[in-house]
Length: 290
Length: 346
Image (cartoon, rainbow over all chains, first blue to last red; front, side, top):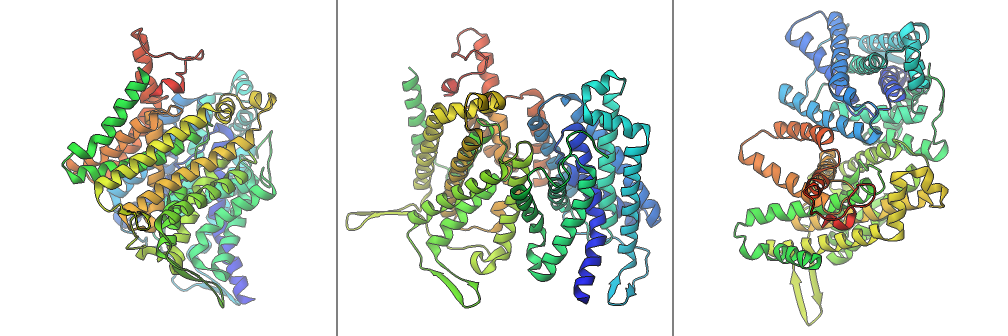
C-alpha cells in the first residue's frame, strides 16, 4: 500500500509535465492541422537550454528556466515562419514530411553541438526529500509539479479568457470564417506554434534537472505526447491534460509492478487500447477547444 | 520497344557482378537493394493509398528477427515452468515465417489503426516500431538483447542428393537480392493495376467518392498494409541472412526515415520512384563518408534535403523528369489528370 501511494505521488508529479507536452501538441494539431514531429525536439531544446544557462553561463536556476521557455517560444515561432507558413493549405502529409525533416535536422544539430554524452544539471533544492508519512518526494520534483500546474492553468486562462485565445478558438472552429471576421490567421498560427513549442520547452527545462539530458530524449517525449493526445482526442485540451496524468499513472504502475524495461512501451499500449475501445479519444470534440 | 527496354535494364542489372570488381561497392549495392525493396513496399502504402507508415522498420526488423530466430533455434521460458523450445530450422523456412509474421503484424496494425482516419496510422506505426525495439532490447532470453543474434546462417537451397547451394559470397547474395527485388516489383505492379490497386488509388484521390461507389476502403487499406509489411519483412529476412548479425538497432527510426526519403524523393505513387530515390539515398551516405563528413552532419543534410524535396519537388524526381520530358513533346503518355500513369514509370 505504501508502495502504491509512492507510485501514485510519482505519477502525479510526472503527469504535470506530460500534460504540458500533450497540451502543446494538441493545440498545434487542433488549430494548425499539423502533426508536429518537432515537438520532442523542442522538449530536448528546453532541457539543453537549461543545461547551457545553468552549467555553462552560471545563470540562476529560476532565471534559466524562464530563459529556456522564452527561447523555446522563439524557436517555435522561427520554425513556423520559415517552414510552415509557406505550406498553409498543404495537405497533412506534406507538412508531416517537412516536420520529420526538421526533426532529424534539429536532433542531429543538437548532437553535433552537445555531443551524445548524457548531461546532468545541478539544482538549487535541498538534497534531502520531503517525507510525508510513507511517501517521500524530492523538492525538485515538487517544484516541477507546481510550475507545471501553474503553466497548465495559464494555458487555460490564455485560451479561454484572452482576445488571442478567442481568436485561436475561432480559427480552430473555422479558419475561413475566422479570417473573414478579421482574425489575422498567420499571426494566430505563429502564436499557436510558439505557444505549443514553449510548453514543450518548459516540460524539457523542468524535467532536464530531474533526469539527464541527451540528444535523443525528444523521441520518447514525442511518442508520449502523441499517445497522450490520441488518448484525449486530437485537438482536445482537457483531454491532453487528463491524458498526461493517465499515461504517467500507467507508466509508474507498469514500471513498478510489471517490468521497468517496458515503461516506455505503456504509451503504445494506451494508444492500442484507446483505438480499440474508443477511437476518437476520451474527450473528442469537433467544434471547440478550451 | 518497352519490352526491349525492360529486358535491357534487367540484363544490365544482372550483369553487374560480372564487371564490377570492387566487392565493397557490390556490398553497398546489395544493402541498397535490400533497402530499395523495403522502400518499394513503403511506396505501396504511401504512394498508392496515401497512408504514411512511419514504423516501417518494425516490419523489416520483425522479418529479420523471426527469420534469424527460426533458423538459429531458441529456448524461452514463457510462463514459469513452461519452456518453449525450437530446434534450428532451414533458412528458407525461417524467411517464409519472417514474411508471414511481418505480414500478420501489418494486418493487425492496419485493422486497429484504420478504424479512424487522419494521423492515427502514422502515430500507431511509429510507436509500434518503438515497442518492437523495446521488446528486442529487453527480452534478452529470446533476442539476446543488445548482445545481438550472431552467426545467423546464410540461405542454403538444396535438393537432397542433387545439389546444394549456400548464399555465402557477395555475387550470390546480389543475385538473391535482385531476384527478390524483381519479384516484389512485379507483384506491386500487378497489384497496382488490379482491381485492388485501382481501389487504393481511388481512395487516395478521393475517399468519400470511393466509398460512395462501393469501394470497401478499410478493407483495401488493411490489405495494402499487410502486403507492404510482408514485403518489408522479406527485405528484413534477406538483410539478416546477408549481414548475419541482427541487433535491436535494426529498429532505429532513422531507417524508416531513410525509406520515407527514398520514396518521397524518387516519387511516391510511381513504380520507379523508390528505385531512383533508393539508389540516390542508398549511395549518398557512401559518397558523404568518402568526404569524411561526421554522421551527424550527414543526417542534418538528410533532414534538410527532405524539406527541400517537399518544397521544390513535391511529386519527386521521377514525375518531375517525366513532365520535363513531356514538355519536349515526345515523352510517354500521361492520364487525363496529368498524373503520369504508373505504366510509364519504367
